[in-house]
Structure formats: C-alpha cells, structure tokens
Image (cartoon, rainbow, N blue to C red; front, side, top):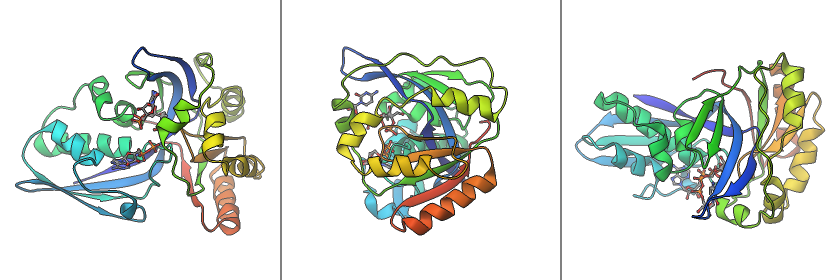
Length: 276
Ligand SMILES: C[C@@](CO)(OP(=O)(O)O)[C@H](O)COP(=O)(O)OP(=O)(O)OC[C@H]1O[C@@H](n2ccc(N)nc2=O)[C@H](O)[C@@H]1O
Ligand SMILES: Nc1ncnc2c1ncn2[C@@H]1O[C@H](COP(=O)(O)OP(=O)(O)O)[C@@H](O)[C@H]1O
C-alpha cells in the first residue's frame, strides 16, 4: 500500500494574532501539489521506518520522525514503513506534516479503521489536519480550523527551494506585526481573477524569513520575472517559493530556465490539485 504525501503550499499566509500559549493564529489559502513524498507500508509484527529518496539522508528514521509519531498515534499492529523523501526538509511545504498525514491515511486503510478527527492531529504538527485531504482549503487558527475553499481555476506552480533549510520557530520569532484576515471571495471567475486576488494577499512570514535566509532576495525577483509568471511568493515559513502560471507549458518552460540557471536549486513544476 502506498500514499502520496503531497507538497503543501500556502498561496496566502496572513498571521492575524498570537494565542496565550505563544503560537500564532493564521489565515491561509492552502493548496496541494501533484508531487510529494511517497510512503509505503507492508504488514509487519513491529513498527519500523526506512528512508530513501533524494532527501532521505537529511532526516533521521528514529522515533522523532513524524511518520513514526503518526503511526504510534494510530495504534494497531506493526507496519514496515518506507518513506521516499522527495521534498526538501524544513522548507515551508509541510513535508513532515504531509508525511504524518499520509501515515495516518495509510494505517487507517491498512487496519480498516476510521480516520481520526482532523483537528485532533495538530499535536503532531499544525499542518497535519489540512494535509489529510488534497483539496484546496482555507486554514485558520493554528491549523485546526478548516473550511472548503472556492473552486480554483486550473493553475500551475513552479516550486523552488534554494537549498537553505529554515527553522519555522526562527521565522515566527522575528515577526513584528500582525496582518488582517484574508478576504476570500465566494468564487473565482477565471485564472486572471484568481491571480489578481492572490496578488492582493501576502505571506506575512516573507519579511522575517528574508532575514533568516537572505537568498530569498534573489529567488523571489527571479521567479516574478519568469515569462508567464502571474505571481511569485514564499510558502509557509520558507524557504520554498513558488511562481503561479495559467498554463502547463509556461510552468514547464519556467522550470527548465531555472534548472539551467541554478543547478543547485530544487525546482519542481506541478499542477495545483483540484480536489481531495
Ligand atoms: C508556517 C506553517 C504554515 O502552514 O508552515 P511550514 O512553514 O511549517 O510549512 C505552519 O503553520 C507551521 O506549523 P508547524 O509545522 O506545526 O510548526 P512547527 O515546526 O511545529 O513550529 C515550530 C515553532 O514555530 C512557532 N510557531 C509555529 C506555528 C504557529 N502557528 N505559530 C508559531 O509561533 C512556534 O515557536 C513553534 O514551536
Ligand atoms: N518525515 C519528516 N519529514 C520532514 N521533516 C521531518 C519529518 N519528521 C520529522 N521532521 C522534522 O520536522 C522539521 C520540519 O520539517 P518540514 O515539515 O519539512 O518543514 P516545513 O513544514 O517547514 O516544510 C524538520 O526539521 C525535521 O527535523
């Protein structure tokens, strides 16, 4: 059995306040890519994890790995888990949360159990509830308040990570002021309308992340200048950024240009998943 742990992208990320426990309150339009990590499971008498893939060596397969923490949360008999880590680690596209959500889905399927209530999974990571589904969602609170997003027009992204891991805590710690909630319309008429609305939104973590990873000052203008790019923005707490395109061909051409110019960057063109 296998599950795709899709990359999570915060198309907008407004930080609207702070809870008494210090965690920040968000308002984010979250979408998922058609690419991600791949988690496989086989029945076994104990729980184990092996890591593979281009970013497998950046992680530890011990008990702190979110896949094992999620598997333990699910209980049940053992499983031999193998994770192909295709997404860069600590990169703002929720790889760890996506992996944990994939483990929850996989073990529920394997053991014939029900999926837990999404909001109960924030203890594993604030992005785990949203990662249970592949549908575009509005995410509020720290990640436990999810609502259906309006249907999005077909759209493509080029995801770019410049190879600098960014610790989420360091970015939040540098945030100086809070923003307004997003003003999400009931519907988007077409790609132009969608991109226009997105351009008026923000990622409030972009400025503090630039202080932690100054390479963002190079990445974002380069993405914005790509032919056909309707928007360039950072996802999550960074350092992965994305450019938004209205066609598959433009996204593929942009990815090719970036790969040639920056062989050391991780560059991934992808459609935005339309539904769960
Ligand atoms: C910023 C977001 C947006 O989707 O994405 P990523 O950058 O992780 O992809 C998430 O909210 C990331 O949530 P999560 O992945 O659970 O964050 P963690 O790494 O567990 O948080 C590390 C630390 O960041 C700070 N933190 C995190 C989440 C939050 N809502 N407020 C915070 O202040 C806290 O200091 C926390 O201890
Ligand atoms: N399966 C996993 N994949 C990625 N990171 C993991 C995993 N398990 C634990 N972690 C830890 O979670 C931290 C956040 O990683 P990640 O979720 O990739 O960040 P982000 O949400 O910013 O993309 C990493 O620094 C890593 O130590």
